Image 1 (tube, protein in one colour):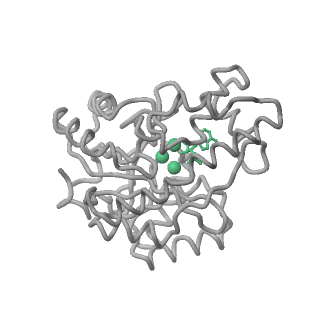
Image 2 (image 1 turned 45 degrees about the vertical axis):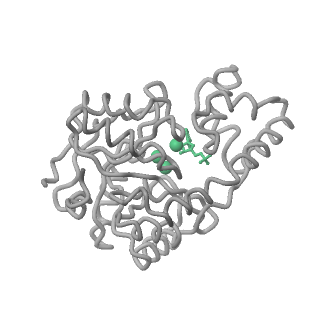
Length: 284
Ligand code: AMP
Ligand code: MN
Ligand code: MN
Ligand code: MN
C-alpha cells in the first residue's frame, strides 16, 4: 500500500472519552474519505467488534486499535496499539488492570475541585461517561463547561486539570514495557502517540524512544491532530533516526471539541515507512 492512503489510525468513541458511537465515527470517517480506519479508545478495546463491523458495512479497511496510558519519567505518555488480536488474554487483562483506579482518582479530583468551590464534580461528570470504568479528565472538562465554570475544555485543562492545578491527581498507569509487550504479544504494532505533546526534555525523549525500541516498539505518530507542521517535520526526522515506521491519525474525540476531523490530515511524508505497510496481513 502506498503512503498516500487516507488512513486515520487514532480516534475515540463513547467507549472511552469520545462523544460519538463507533458506528457514527465509521460513518463520519467514510464521509471524510478515510480508506483505512482504527478506533483507539483509551485503555479499552470493548468497542472493537462494533468498529470492525461498522467499517465493513461502510466499505472501509480496518485495523484493531487502542491507546494505552503509561507512566514514564514521571509523566503520562500514550502508546497506540494497532493490528492486534483483541481477544488476547494478556492484553484484555492488562487493560482491565490499568483501568482500575480511575474511579478513585476521579473522586480525589472531585475533592480537589471542591476545595476551590466547585462542588459535585464527580457526580456531575458521571453524566457524561459512556463507560463507567473509563471516567477521565475529559468528562470533568465537559461538566465544567456545561456548568459555565469555563468557556471551553482547553480552559478547563489549563486552569483545573493539569499539574499543580486543583483538580489534578496523578495516576499510576501501566509501564512502557507492559504496554508494548501486551500489544506485540497480541500480534500488533506499538506506536508512540503524539510525541510533541509531552514536553519531554531531549534526554527524556531519547530514553523514551530507545527503551520503546528495546521493548519491541516499531512506530511513531508523525501526522496527528496534535502536531503542528513543524512538529511533523521534527518527528519525521526522529522516525528516520530511530528506524521507526510512521503513523497518521486525527485523535478525533467530538465534533464540538476536536480541531481535526477524521481523515482531514496532511499526508505522511513520502520518505517514511507507513505503519500500514508493516501491518498488511492484519488489515481486515
Ligand atoms: P485522563 O486519561 O483522565 O488523564 O485524561 C486524558 C484525556 O484528556 C486525553 O485523552 C485528552 O482527551 C484530554 N486532554 C488532555 N489534555 C487536554 C487539553 N489540554 N485540552 C483538552 N483535552 C485534553
Ligand atoms: Mn482522550
Ligand atoms: Mn493521547
Ligand atoms: Mn487519543
